[in-house]
Amino acid sequence: MLKKILMIATFATVSSFSNMTLAEENADSLKTAVEAAKTAKKAAATVGGEWRDIGKFLKKAKKLAADGKFDKAVKLAKKAETQGKLGKAQMEGQTNLEFPSYFTK
Image 1 (tube, rainbow, N blue to C red):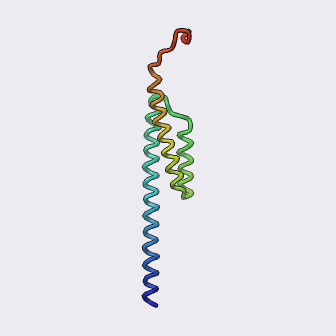
Image 2 (image 1 turned 30 degrees about the vertical axis):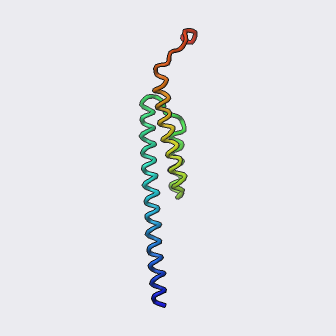
Image 3 (image 1 turned 60 degrees about the horizontal axis):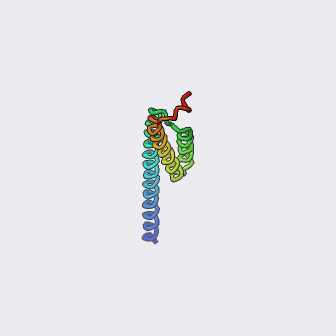
């Protein structure tokens, strides 16, 4: 009987540590994704190409993380990062456009 109790206690301890490790990994991956998104947002803003939804996505990701929905939060942060990169690329691609003369009157 004592052996059975020790096994159950050991299992409970190990599983609680593995849950803590998983939560820490989720928090770390979210932190990495949010930092990358913020960096991309700043880079897009420097060239005037920040898209409007980046901030919304980051706010929503923060709220999802507070609710414990780390996977959805990371996905949203990555979407914000992508929009930052695309916004920057869009503005850089449009800086040297040449328009026909009938557009410049």
